[in-house]
Image (cartoon, each protein chain N blue to C red):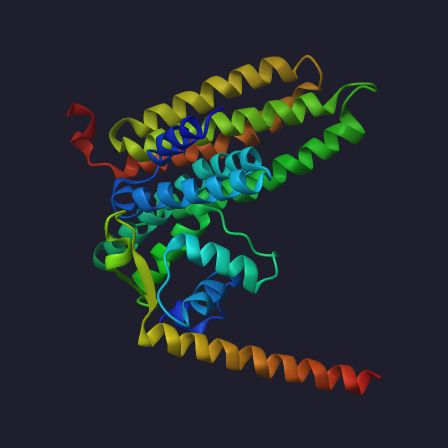
Length: 204
Length: 111
């Protein structure tokens, strides 16, 4: 893969950042990334490794900037109308429930799964589904009017798929618990994004 | 009243960025290289992490952005420490110094 292709891909990923952040920093970030890449290439040490590291982490950092921007604007609103910080609450719930899901996977591995079942596939499936939901959240923050529909629909669809796949390898109650814990925070966040929007947003 | 960021200990990323800018203005690439050298290769910022931190430091008023003639053609910006940022850095260094001396005393006492 040529260096120009990598830089173009990096530039595309920068589109995931909030508009205000892009306006202030996108050109500089691209220049800095290109300089780092050139330096690594000149030294003949791991330029592709650097590219992989930078591009892998960028979507998560973009999501962080979206949340940061949303929280900042909500804090400004809160001082005037004392609104409930829905997004803040939802992020807290996601973090807590993510830990619960991890515990449940450990429990499934040692107690509930039949012997010989491949738990790595379960972990991979949940990781992939989380990744899909992260992309859907980024879409939600970029296009808030339709964001809640995208988030809730994605979470519900993936939850159904997850339940169908899980019920083949785990007991019914455990499958339902895992799916519920996985989907609930995303659906909560979708509802929170919806509540942030004015009533006429969907009519626009 | 001081805000939370001003009264809390600095994060390692913030500390290294402020430390890197203490001698004078630098652009993003120079900050990454300087921090890597200051930390003896332990802290290597990704571009996303660096510019996220820079954004928050600009908002807090610890650093400021400046155009220099040298980088003007590339649209590159230099960042420099403000008086507030310099004061915060000095306070953090003093806090670490105190912590280090308390730690050293404790270790001596334990021997």
